[in-house]
Length: 160
Ligand SMILES: [Zn+2]
Image (cartoon, rainbow, N blue to C red; front, side, top):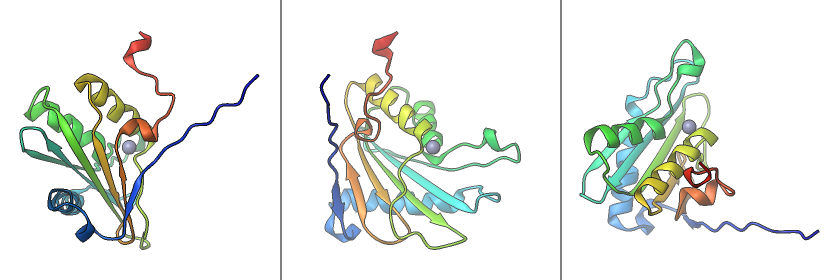
């Protein structure tokens, strides 16, 4: 028997002004996108903004449903919109911003497990990772170089 260890690195920015203008702008687009969320049940608003290699930005927000399991996360709404608007477009960066109407959140919220799987599938499809920028309502911003950093030992199409 041997013990293995997984490592995951990410960068922490205290504020968007420390980031590149492009990343700061994408975070702002994500923050604006969360205003379009439909979240009457959780009051948890999420916006995602995706920068494509062609320079376009596609946004998404969470869309809840009275039948709770049908609710859609902002990340998957945004990636679905990417494939609809720009089929096969390469994603470079995804920014995710949140706001909880019930209490302030001063740290980033990472994508849920289902979204991590969808993010990794997109990376697999485009044969390249993309960066994730995670932002709470206030507090630091976390930057990950790949969705795989958030989903180690990924199940991917290479198994099939
Ligand atoms: Zn999700």
